Image (tube, rainbow, N blue to C red; front, side, top):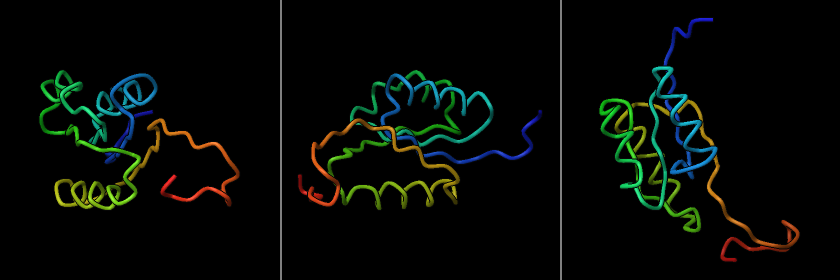
Length: 103
């Protein structure tokens, strides 16, 4: 099947593993990817290969206020966000109703 529309993705944890593979596939399909990572320089190869459709943004998933700025930057640059993949690794042990955002 041929894709007729491109999508704009935000992918957290895109510097390696599943996130990186997903970013590479989306870019190869002609989509736009905003990679939200702790070290944007780790994706310099993708930035060089896809200068018009890829951007790596510094992002720390532990900062609950950072998500709004990430989405705003994506919308300002690419007009929309179609797909959000929350792939960044973060672990807090406990029942969801007993754990605060600060933890």
